[in-house]
Image (cartoon, rainbow, N blue to C red; front, side, top):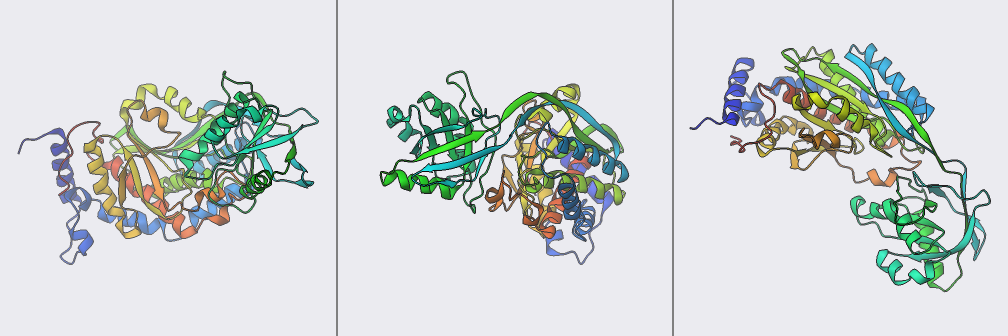
Length: 474
């Protein structure tokens, strides 16, 4: 057999496995099916899983973080206080090289805001201004509403939009598709001559609870105020228009963008025993929108990564490479934390083995998505087998996250923790994003999945290959 770099990796792993563990004669069927790569880590993986799922430590820490500090929009005092608290707690946990890494972040503030239906009847409508939107004049904007279902209808009715407030009542397809209305809706409406824009919240389900999120302007149209309303109210206004009723609203928004503010990524490590300069990053983002408490999006992701590292420390597990937890700042409206990390660590990125991000709500884990070479993907799939007992063994192609995106673009393989997030967008970016929506046992399994994946990758004899032909999995 011709020995490629990948086959040598497997030979090394096989030797390490044989030295580390001899399977007992009464091995379970699952253990008996382990590849040579997996077999050497089965006992350690089971220790990590047992420790992670023994209690509700992760959920309790998440509850404390979100109860103490509430929502944490970039530029806010609550975010900076939360970041300082995390650094103190990481030090108390005994993590190594705990520190903050500076990043300048956008500072958008919502201000007071309201939306009133004036015609055909007078009533208050719940709303949330969209991040980066400008405000209205102090007296607000009172104007008729034009409701459209999509950009095609807006284009067909553009002559009717001038001087009006355009409402996009775009049905939810999936987040990736429908979020384009939030991102670019103000531009599309302004090009048609609208004085402001409204958006049916980007969510498949809600109970009259608007969802915020970031939007943007460009040079092709003048900036106009932009806000989200509840799904139910968007449907009501649409029905009124279809009946031929005149729909008029008054929109008031005190939103403004202040100068950029100083912030920081928070970092802690378990240093590698042999190759401390080689790094596996595990992460989530600390900032949230200024509604709810950002438990799912994404304090839960931070805590899962942090708890995974704490368990390694507690169990005395020190892999060959360094495992580094990062709590990113400013994922929601700028991704400045990820960009600052890329720039600060540019010279070390060739020694970054993989970066893993959790930003999907820490519901029941199903596995990981992976972006990297075919050879590395084959190895990660085998490591995933260690997570079969908690149902997190599905490794799919394509994974990463906003925060690790900048270093992935520089060649670092990326992974995202996948979970059963069917309810995630019910609460996403709304006042309903609170810790009670998360189950402590499911969150503990997320910790287990993160800990096992990070530890094994960090302990392999060689880094994940960034090229080559995938080896056999047998």
